[in-house]
Image 1 (spheres, one colour):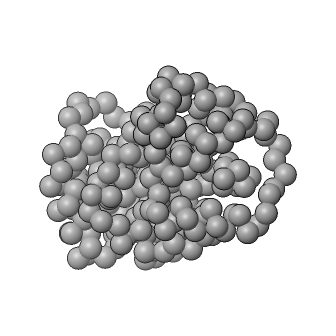
Image 2 (tube, one colour; image 1 turned 120 degrees about the horizontal axis):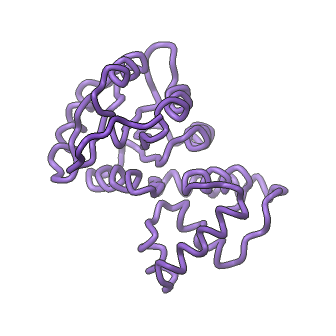
Length: 222
């Protein structure tokens, strides 16, 4: 399904957040950025999909709280969005850093996962990053994921083994770095990063950065 065609000068953001005070604070923060605009806010899943069904244009990024009222969970929202509105990037902004919730959120289509304790600049940059195709993670979340999967031990993978350099690129991708940042961190060109990413996608049988991150978590590659 393709999103309605509209002229785009800023990144359009919607919120799915049931806490009124926090939602107002978040809207003010987003609207304060010159390249972002918060166009709509829903309190629950039904409200979100009602807005989407009536919208003339859809958001570029949805900021999603996993702890929703009613019978539909944030994970179910992600699954439905992936099926009906795949062009909408989703950044989870949650108070929970439980490994299982983070894992299920990413595997079900979240492009990034930040905690509500993140500072304002981290939240704004996270929105920009998911819109650009990166996968921002709060430092606590990234560390928790890595420690949790490390304790599980290595898993047998059906994917073709990655080279040492490809593993380095994948680890930086999991941290939420953009291509330029990966290039700077590894002292290589962006063209070389692109070359490694294409090889990673081929070996992991994926087609996007989000899918690569999900496979990395699922197969214990990082």
